[in-house]
Amino acid sequence: MLAIDKLIEKIIKLKSPVVMGLDPRYEMIPQCVRNKYSLDLEGVSKAILEFNKTLIDNTYDIIPAIKPQMAFYEMFGILGMKTFLDTCKYAKEKGMIVIADNKRGDIGSTAKGYSNAYLGKTKIGDIEESIFDVDFMTVNPYMGTDCIEPFVEDCKKYDKGIFILAKTSNPSSGELQDEKLKNGEEVYKKVISLIEKWGEDLRGKYGYSSIAAVVGATYPKQLEELRKLAMHTFFLIPGYGAQGGKVEDIRLGFDNKGLGGIVNASRSLMCAYKKEEWKEIYSEEEYGLATRKEALKMNKELNFIKED
Image (cartoon, rainbow, N blue to C red):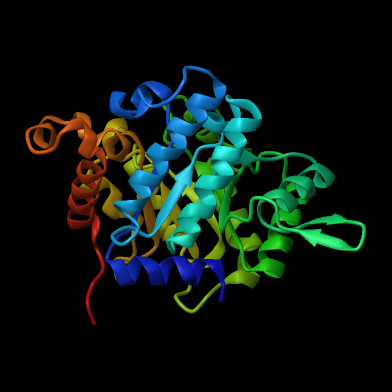
């Protein structure tokens, strides 16, 4: 089954277009977890893994996916990367879709190496090994088609997917993405047209391709434009919650059946135990329950699926 169909069916089953970003800054982790471990690379990595596993335990049956941001694991070196790998394996064992947020993009041979690591396999003599083996990864398209093709080929070969940066949610994204080409077309519209083309051979039964796009909720006008322009492109939509994306804005990224996107929330889920409404109910030690409650609240707000 195509990766995008697996994701959409999970969304439909759980009535949840939510992906939990696991971007665990050490200071975000509850003190009750930090107190268990030494204040060094090994102890921090163990604290992050316990934190991640607890959040997964409390959400795997109500949301379809996690999205670990690689920077927050790489910064702790080899031990941090092991924590990333262990987190991904644990989530997959629980039946969750895993999206590695690593925004890779480089010349073709280097892109192939990145793709081997996350989507395909690494060949060692006559043996092929899966390394990180995630379901999707994020990709930077700004070096052009030959740098995207290795990822697309592995998506075809191994039933994986990619989310390509199109219109991102950060404040300065317009410095490049909103600039106009000679024909008057904005760069982000050119990128989305390329994504539609790159994904033609990987469209699934819901009409969407495993070659998907990142489109931020913080720019609702562009989100709405791109939904109309890219009928076969599934959106990963960051910007909800702490970044200010509103429900009515996010709705613009979905089709008339309530499909077509998955919404990322990182801080609002990871740090739910700090919110006043949950602090009154749950102790710090019950941080996983607070995250579950926040995820259920998101599901209620963001479930746009129309029943047949």
